[in-house]
Image: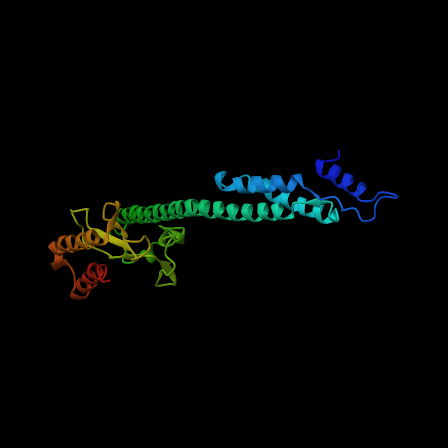
Length: 259
C-alpha cells in the first residue's frame, strides 16, 4: 500500500513537467517527508522515554533519508531525519550507559558474594575433614592439608578460594589458598584458629577456620585479635611442642597479621 511519502513523491514528480507549459515557471517546492518528521519527533522524545522511542526513530530516519535521496528532490526533510537519528543515537547510548552503571555493580557484588560463600564452604569442608581425621586411626590432626588428598579430600578445588588468583603451592604441587597451623595437641578450647585464607581475596575481610569447623569472616583488626587469642590458648600446652614446632606455630599466628 503506498505511503504518504510515496504519494507525495509521485505527485511531485508528475507536477514537475507540463507539456506546453511555461518553461520559466518556478519548480514546485518539495514536501517534507512524513517519516523524517516522525523520526525527529520521536528522537526529541527519546530522552524522556529512556531511549525507547529511539528504537523507532532511528530506523524511521534511515528509511526517510533513503526515500529523500531516491526522490531526486521531490521530498524534503533531510535535516529533520538526520537530527532525529543523531538525537536518538545519543539518547540510546546514554540509556545503555546508565543501565550498565546500575547493573554491573550489582552483578559484580553478586559474583563476589558467591565467591566468598564458596570460600566459606571450602573452609567448612576442610574443618569437617580434619574432624574426621581426628577420629581416624591416628587420632590427630594432619601435619599438612596436602596429606588429606585423596583419602579425605577427593576434590583438590576445595583447597583453592574462587577469588584467589595466586594460590600457594604445597608439597606435591598441590595448589592451596589456606594457611594451616598443622598438628596441634588436643585442645579443650575449640575456638582456636587453625586455618585462614590469603589476604586480599575478599577485600578487607578474611575467612578463618576454627577447630570446631566453624568459619568466621573477620575484618583485619578482628582477624589479628583472633590470632593473638588463639596462640595464647595454644601456649597453654606449650611444653608439649619441640622448639622447632613452637617456632612454626608462632610463625603461623604472627605472619597472618603481617601486611
